[in-house]
Image (cartoon, rainbow, N blue to C red; front, side, top):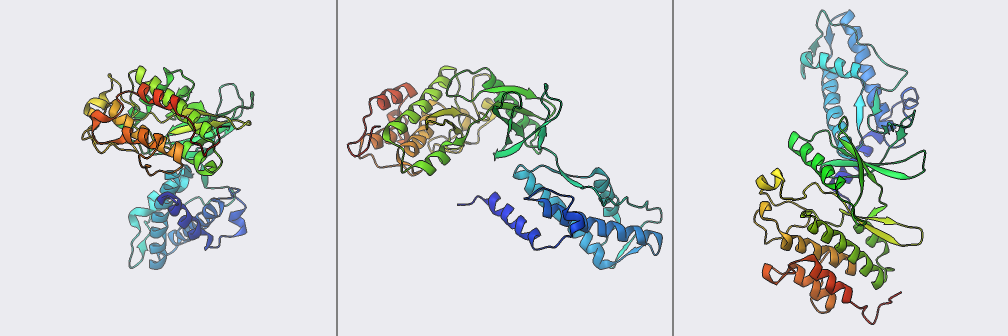
Amino acid sequence: MASPLDLMLADLREKYEAVPASGAFDRLYDDPEWGHMFAVLHKRLNEHFTDINGRAETTHHYWAENSRDLLALIRDLEADLHTLRRAGVEVELATSYVTALQRCRPWLSPSGGSTVPEDFEPIEVIAYEPVLTHASTRMQLNKQEHPVELKMVGSGSYAHVYSYVDPDYGIKFAVKRAKKELDERDIGRFKREFAVLSRLSFPYVVEVYRYDEARNEYRMEYCDTTLRNYIAKKNDTISFAARKRIALQFLYGINYLHHQKLLHRDISLQNVLLKVFGSGAVLVKLSDFGLVKDRSSEFTRTQTEVKGTIRDPMLDSFKDYAVVNEIYAIGHVLAYIFRGRESLPPATDEIGRIIHKCVVNDLGQRYQAVTELIAELERLEAPPSQTTA
């Protein structure tokens, strides 16, 4: 099912596909996905700026219909570029055009036409270079003379994730960049996520490498897919043995965190990543530590609203989050690994019994430590109807 953001982007594409631009503007934009939208907006801006320049030299009156159209265009620019930013497409309007719109906005009237100020300075109209450009598609590596191209690969509540290939080694890395609209508290949470990850070293936890204060981003190892997408695509062909290996890697990673006095607090099918190798083998990588809890966290002491993708119904306050609440989310992930469905299975077999013990409402009846779960899974044998290859 498409997400709300996917639907918004689909509507945005349809909105501009229905509007003709012209060859003179289309040729300025080589973006196959959003180039036509940029060309349409550029053309409309230039038409208005040219007309305003003409009226500033003659009657100083800008027609009523044109005034309303320019006001609508300003609203479209703000709303549509905001939609793109939410999807990780960072687009900037040329500074001179931003300034021009700021100069026009105060005297534009939605009715009766608009009076162009007597001292209005002509707008420099740009016709032969783009005025809408991507702001986040390049990154400068210290050892490289030219910046590398970034490709958008994912987006969450706090950050966009891009990938790039290191030109020296031919290895793909990821860049996690905080969204520009984050407030100071969320930027602090983002930086703390990096600080926590940078002191961890374990095969089943994603590695991070360097924080860039100027862009509020950090580099990390690249993973090929999420647990949700991997199993959704391969559910019919994954053997029991492969599911068990994935489940144990996932639990080993969580157990390592708990031994480091950390609670993830946002375990989900999206936050468990996988590196997929040519042989078909996979390696689990825990990611997205924005809600991680440790004893020194100021956020932990003050945060009471229950957050996280999989929320334990028995948890009243986020500051009281404990291992047994993490076990609840773990149970949901295990259900998806072994069954390929997000709904919880009945406790009619050994897997169902284990999952039920993770999510039972009586906290005292749940597993009290991940090591207990690991011991149970390590003893699991494939059901008679499933292959163990």
